[in-house]
Length: 179
Image 1 (cartoon, rainbow, N blue to C red):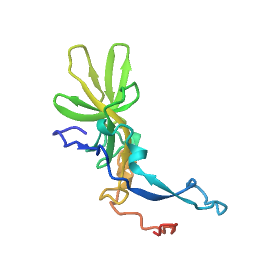
Image 2 (tube, rainbow, N blue to C red):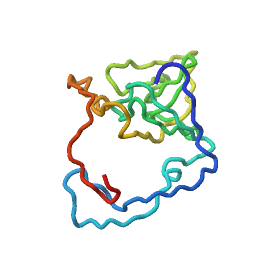
Image 3 (spheres, rainbow, N blue to C red):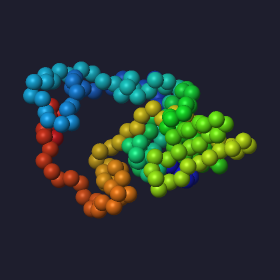
């Protein structure tokens, strides 16, 4: 996420409650389990994603530098300014008056911002260089029907696989909420 300063979208201080239905239990990614019961309970995304409302905001990612962390172009990240950035955290930082999103690495007195894509280089900071960590990324949100290729998000373009830009038109199972 390098380029002109994007607009940060603040999390609401006292957001209206919006509890949506959530099927209790886990979704097997392998073979379905016919023995699972489907009980509904409520889930409020504010409770799930926002632990410090006054210090939390959202930003849209632009670029592919964190694709191996499963943070892709057009994703929305939840950024928490109340958390202390630690080694290994994905952070939003201000470098040369531009926002970037990278993995924070601290080694001795050296601080690096690392990509999660071999096509991008690391950013190394020495004494005297200005680096401002804006916040820690606590979640990412991806619209599954966003106008982009899932193959791109999973690095198929880097692995030499052909990307047709077509959505998978395979069969989809209907669940408790339909197709």
